[in-house]
Image (cartoon, rainbow, N blue to C red; front, side, top):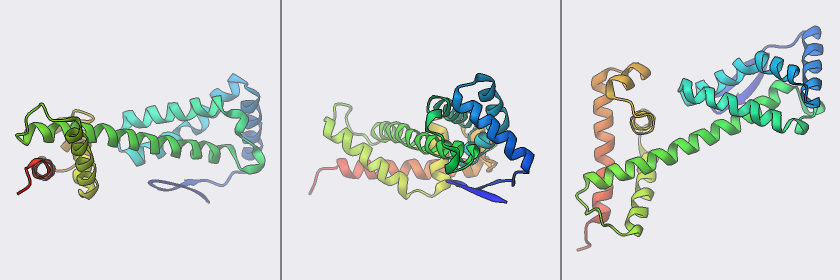
Length: 204
């Protein structure tokens, strides 16, 4: 069994039988030519693979659907870049999906950092007329603190600030007890707020 490696671990692709390989090659050829029926069949055949890869890495069905759509759109637009001699079409699609997943993680982190920087500023007691340099410092500090957080706390903050989920909804999505979600969120926010408040305090 061939394993395609992803950010979330290896993605197993069953070995193709001779007739399956021939069908895949036919679909790939039509896809590269720009045949829309072939594209529809390619999406139908490997869409679940791409979606599962994205869902496994991102942990969010809606984001996974977006990544799957972006992957196939990018593949269709860049289909002339596929060459069968370099490997099968599903492997090429997974390569595109991995890049789109990385983009989604980066975008999520940027949005979360900005939201948390705002929350930290609001809770730190620092006047809202802070200089731009202080706001930039807040974002840097938040990014640093986010990287220090345990993965579960980081995930909870992403769901709270990016997906705008309540503690109850986060508990349902993650399977964690509600009390655990609340305590993780509280500790993470306090940690980030302390960091921003300490940076804003005048030097002795």
